[in-house]
Amino acid sequence: MKPITPQAEIIEETQTLWASGRQPMGCPNCQRVFLVPTVSVHKLCPICRQGTLQSQPVRMRAAEPEKILPFQVRKSHLESIYDDFLDDVWFKPDDFNLQYLIQRTQPIFWPQWLVDTNISGNWQMEAGFDYQVESTKESYANGQWFSRKQIEDRVRWEPRLGEIDTRLENIHVPALEEHENRSLLTGTYRHQKTQNFDPQMLENAFLEVPDRPPSEAWQAALTQVKKEAAKSCAQAAGAGHQQNFALRANYQNQHWTQYLLPMYTTYYLDDEGHPQIIVVNGETGTIQGPRLASQKKGAQIALILGAVAVGLFILAVIGFVFMAIFPPAGLVAAFLSLLGFGVGCGALFPAIWPVQWNRKQTGPRIRMRKQPS
Image 1 (cartoon, helix red, strand yellow):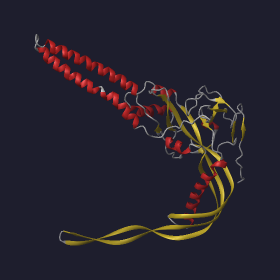
Image 2 (spheres, one colour):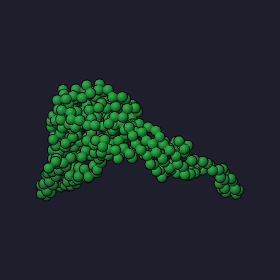
Image 3 (spheres, one colour):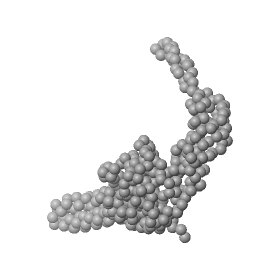
Image 4 (cartoon, helix red, strand yellow):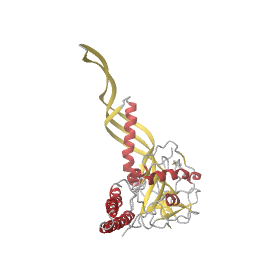
């Protein structure tokens, strides 16, 4: 295979790539860059939802991606996913509703690097081989002893060393600085329906541009390469396990390409008007993001219930005053006072529950990057 040097070049703002009708646009708020369909009318940044995308040149590799994982979750499936997501939240902000989540949904493909490399050198490891040991277990029951055979699985460790001269292909390497957090948001991809890249599969999705070039990603790639090399060497040694793997090798003819993974983003505005970003894995439907209750709405309901409770207590007092001239008024007053007490206690729930609920929203979130000073 002819080696491909991962050279980046300047893609002008009016230039389209891969016969996909997409041009580079950047977010002035979070500094993320996307390839956006020229016909798209949605220019709000699909990640931070705070900046308006602007045409700009970008430095990136113009080479076409090698692989793509098409969307398995279609937009028609999102209604039930969002509905389940909303279900457990009481006192939701007015903006946090199914209609807005669907309207604001944007499909995105985000990148990983795929790395191929030749590897040659020497290795050593402790190779583990499975074997079984038969033993007898004695037990006493009903006045007599019984023997029962049992099989125990064990691993025998032996030192092994050798040479390696092979080519490893399609090693997955992060192409984004926030890869770890992004993976927490999307959850695991199964990669079962990965296909060769075809621009027709992009449909109306935005493409996020890598911000971690191959020159900076090689150390992460090297870690993955060594893991794959360890598996290959263990297999060559006929071992089922390996540990303490050490490798001295040369790496040549590196071939870097992109692999595009699907996700959806949408958002709602919280009490303070800040966008809260929701992420859906485009293959599995896993959904992540903060589900915030409205403390303002809870406080408003609590005030209303508190006012009702005060009104009931006032009526109860009036009833007790008239009890001297109209004895049945005492019974009504007692009932109203108990009812007012119950309503007053109930007013605490909408005031407290949103606060407690929001404290539990500790899962992964889109990181809001700071603007450069």
